[in-house]
Image 1 (cartoon, rainbow, N blue to C red):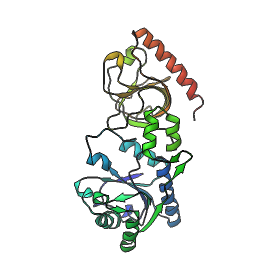
Image 2 (image 1 turned 180 degrees about the vertical axis):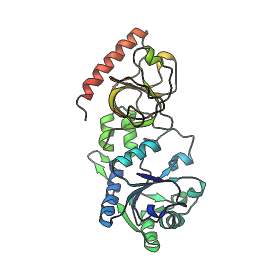
Image 3 (image 1 turned 45 degrees about the horizontal axis):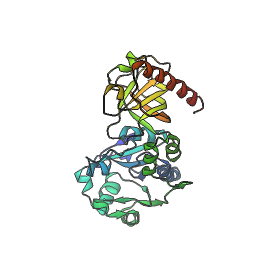
Image 4 (image 1 turned 135 degrees about the horizontal axis):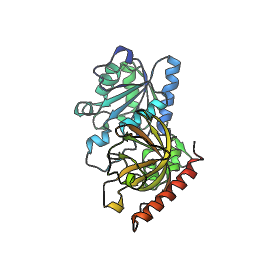
Length: 313
């Protein structure tokens, strides 16, 4: 998958795509339905399949001090879009210039002239332009004037109601990983670089791969059975393990992070990029009376996680 970040400098080979447009936070089943419509058009028209999205997320841009809400980092979103076969990711830099464009100017400057998109697909609740002053119907009108086609996708529902990032966030807040996965169409993953920690896990016999969750919606704190993909370096591959999402109450540390103990693994993966899938919530964080009880509990967590992960594809 190729990533294009500036609509003002687009190679001719990156023009003429069929693209779904949206924020696609989580790349959930509703998002995938919009992308699948674009996919069918790309096949029919023998054109590249594209996705146009924005970085940072507009909500993050306008309210940088608000609580973190994103389900995915830009890296995780790109990884997931690549997995589902997107050829071109138009990851537009959402800055003052772009956010100030009225809807008509956005359609002309970015979609038609800048990226040269042939056909775009949006959800029925799509809004765009300065102050979100344009909607899906406006885009259809602009497309007819400016030479690109527009398809508006109906909102997707499952047996529980409309699929939304909000519903997925709520499921994760409550530790309902499988409900989140049902709505996402894939396991909820946290992607990022393995960073140095305090190495307490190593001292306890459980060395962990530590990751920041800054900027992301915080799932329920506690211990999870996880699957882990190492995406770079000599140990690239698929693994299983147990992970702690939390503030490490035994040690008086308060900033949440994700620490993953990888089963049957020895190797240095500092600086490598990994993707951790939260499969099942095992228990909340607990402050134990001593290290011996903590170690006993960690061993029990690993036994439970292995048993759960035996039955997970």
